[in-house]
Length: 117
Length: 114
Image (cartoon, rainbow over all chains, first blue to last red; front, side):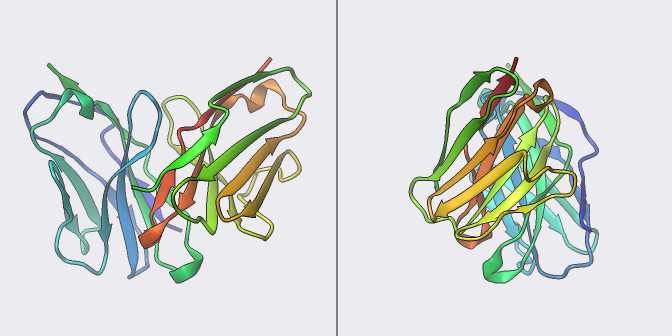
């Protein structure tokens, strides 16, 4: 079974600064996906970024980027130029690749990020 | 991005009644949909996986007779909480599996059972 660990229950950052959220996972799979989702106070889960394990290049989406270290089973999220709207719970998630049948997501416990003005 | 809607967003019901929650994928076809439950300040807990046209697969500890799931079309899945009790009060979230094996989530339904 897969496990996902987010060791930082809460973090805070000043507006315009950079913050990194950590995530580690455990799996015996070689082909899988990793995701970061954010859940703002509205509780709508929003996809932030997606990484395919076979790709060595780290995924980026505007101000969001990841540091994917496959051997270390680490998948951290860096948020640059933090904005007040980034305040949310951030969940790291793992999904093994099973082709067309799809698979469940395994979520970490979440990190509550607060961006301070 | 892919959009998933849920209805209703909030529902309050009396103990013993049944409540149906709808989950629709608006701009993509979701052969697989997922239902989650989330308690305050906690992570999402997968309840069941539903595939269009077949029976749902429930996670261990989830009562399939209490949480009825129907996935009758490629864009609609429903969760019916039967004979609801106060302990069923929670936030229920659905998701649809879209392109590139990515799950897109609905906005959630807050259920309160009195």
